[in-house]
Length: 182
Image 1 (tube, rainbow, N blue to C red):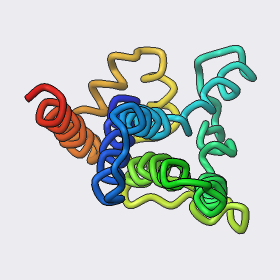
Image 2 (cartoon, one colour):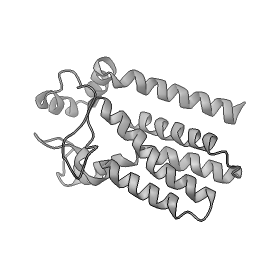
Image 3 (cartoon, one colour):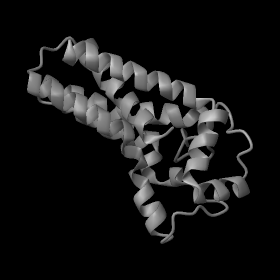
């Protein structure tokens, strides 16, 4: 998924959590939860910083993926989120704890459609994915990385994830319009 899809998934996760929690938050608290969830939906991709800076290049190598870093380990977000929720002194922190767990997991669900996530790490380094990006060999990936429009066009036309991402973006936009503009 591209960053806008991860942001939309995080936003929708935080919005759903707000609705399901049945807690009366102040507008400031609710806004903070929505913003935090939106950011947390994309935060596992912060690993692009060490991934590319360690290479001093924006190119991939044969066996590398940014998803090997700890920020793409679901167990880390589950642990931090549940510990936060369990020691929470109030309902606001409790919801934030759940959000620390669930918003990054919305990211992992998107990544699991085609690219794979190490759901069983540290017990296994295997990447689990429902499908495979068509014709996604390393030579093609290296060529497409040099031509960013090419990778976006290929993603839009060949990916099974792209239609879901479009639905997430439209859903997030609909919620924003319904809740905040009408």
